[in-house]
Amino acid sequence: MTESLHLPFTISRHLRLLLSTDRGHNVARAVLASVRPGDHVLDAGTGTGLLALLAARAGAERVTAVDREHLDLAREIAAENGVPADAITFVEADLDLRPFPDLGIVRNVDLLLAFIYGNHPLTDEARARMVFELRRRYGTPDCTVVPNGIRHRARGCDRLDWDLRSEQSDLDEGARTLQDCYGLDFGALVERAKAEVPFWRTRPVNPIGAEWRPEGTMSTLRFPREDLRLLTEPADFGSFDYAADDFTPLPPEVTLHAAAAGRMSGIVWTQDLMWAGRVLWSTESYSPLAEPVNVTAGDKVTVETADTWRRTNTVTVKKAD
Image 1: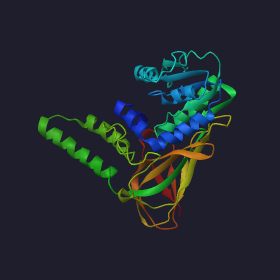
Image 2: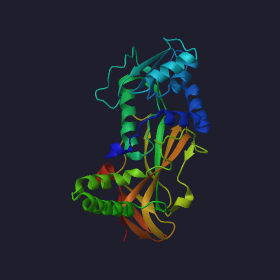
Image 3: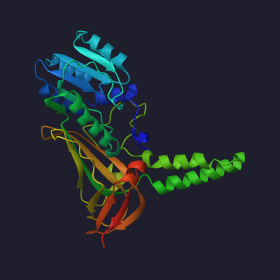
Image 4: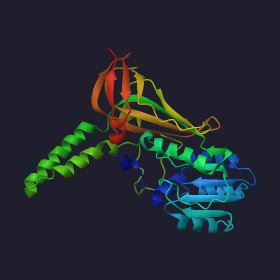
């Protein structure tokens, strides 16, 4: 079901991200500081081609820009900005496929630009694995990756603006309404909808809405604090360092320490995209608890993040005796 977290990149979403200039400045600085004259560059998930354009402007000898959609738009933007046709090679390909499609790369790249994240650990564990595979397949031994790392933290909270059990209860009522209206059993449809519910409200804003205007800030995108109450201290939950030799998956559990009493109904994940020891972009996402638990200050709670969480985006917890 994690496909429910994969987001289509609408034109409005591209525009909203580009107009989020605080985020854009951070990303642009990292790219421009990483390109050396004569570099060969791979821009994975190029979108509108922004990073490929910046790399070409910074003196890259050859840029390969890959995406599975909107490349006609990226080419048009490059032409509008006077970029020579041979400076950037746009390749339509799906990097989720294995083996990787032929990208036409003539020699291994010195720089891998990989802003390909969905900003939820459930999707981005696989994206991080992809970055390691791209570096191994196409990178030189000293290939630079931007961002060069990801770190995650977890905090227990009570979500005040949305409740998993209420949504699922309403769907059960919907099943009864369908039975009364049509005299037919739509249980299979409703059960599938119930399985999707934990994925519905995982982010602070609707990332696929038609709104093209950005939030007030996008370099730090988090849930409004009037909509949730944080109950635990933040705890580290896995990181990906692209200077490492191999990919290490996220851990099967994380232990949280309660700092306040309350009803814990979910986990807020914070993801930081890193470059040169600095945070480029910080976002929050959410996973509901299958069953809320009451905690008091000092409680130790272990959150299970193995197979069930990966399938359903719901977590179960165990309180220490």
